[in-house]
Image (cartoon, rainbow, N blue to C red; front, side):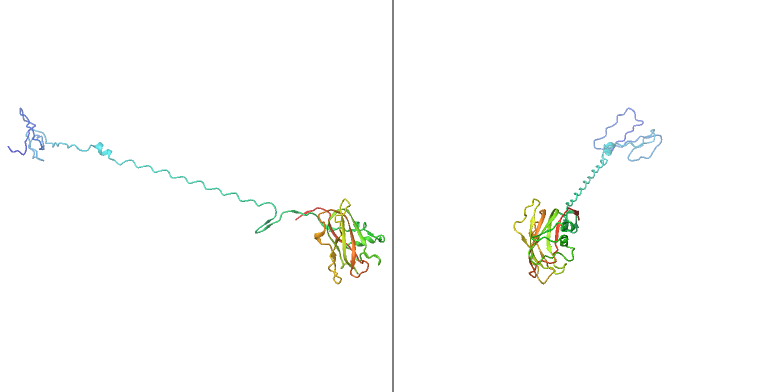
Length: 268
């Protein structure tokens, strides 16, 4: 017998034991059906058997389940995108303060004037004017108004007369001038003034001396320096004394240009 292999007849053998297959050898078995069939894959045909069918020993390997479990894992879920932050709120713009603003432009608010300047010596006030030491003829005092075309002329022996002006209601005097270019022969060169308050007392103890008008220039009249006038103090009356004239004679062509605040107004 050849050691290569054993042939086992599994179809017709009776009373015979099946020889063992030596360890380490692989035995292919075949079942022979009716008729003779050519051997295939190393099997020996057996008479009287059915159509041969190849039987193979299954070599243990990976199970289907194992192969299935080798499937790719579930893909990870993408993370949620971050939410953009809320945009900042712009700050509130500054508010322009009330009042007059100096900058690229100019904002003018409503301003309140302390008073409205006007001629203090009108017809009513002029009628109340008195003169010392010598009185004027009746009705002559209205010629002290600045609108007069001739003014008041004094007698030749009355060279330094004092003119007393009383206001109907207290007023804040802003200026006092005796013009020389509005009446003929006007010659007042300098004067002085004393102011009286509402209580009847002097506001200035010493008379305030005016500027001096040049002899040859009538356009520059004698007047009070604005800084010397008690412009914020209500005045009930004032006394004007003529100090000198341009020709040394008695005053001639005298008119009174006195501006005062007599009322409070509101304007731009």
